[in-house]
Image (cartoon, rainbow, N blue to C red; front, side, top):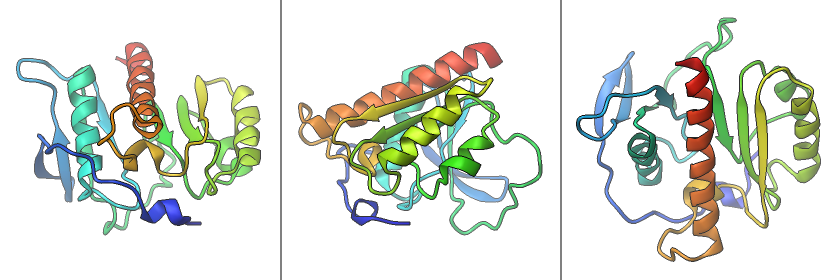
Amino acid sequence: MSCPQCFSGHVNPGAPTGRWNTVHGLRTYIAEPPAGKSAKAIIVIIPDAFGVGFVNNQILADHYASAADYLVYLPDFMDAETKLASGHALADAVFTAHPSSVDAIPDIGNVARPLSIAIGDDDPVMGMKQVRQAQSILEGKDVDTSVVIYPRAKHGFSIRASRAEPDSKETRQAEEAEEQAIAWFKKQFSVVV
């Protein structure tokens, strides 16, 4: 399902600082920790519908890399035909903001790794009824989970909010979602590493 927010938003100011390379046959944007720092872990960002070419996704990867000393990959999955149902865990920890195409019962019921979700209460793609179902299912899991609901945030708020007005609600919520992700990965990778 798509909604108007899937095709709207803002391009953030700033220039990406990462580099492009091919990783496992996929064109990939790579953001590295600051010079002299070793990567504490690897984060793979699966981009929204705007894809890896959208500067906001690249800037987000750069921010994760610099804020927490992670090596961040932003691969171009859009043209790839991959089979993800190998039965092997694809990640040690997952963060998602304003997820799409989630059916709370079967999808959330299959969660077996730490998962953190950032979602707006004004998101038409995953409405509050589904969010509450997901929360209830996740609370019964034996893995670490978190659902943070952002008041009056719309679908796409974490990546397509305008950063031109630093004091706006949109900017604050996008930054809070970024910090939620960084804190989540720091917590999870301190256990994994």
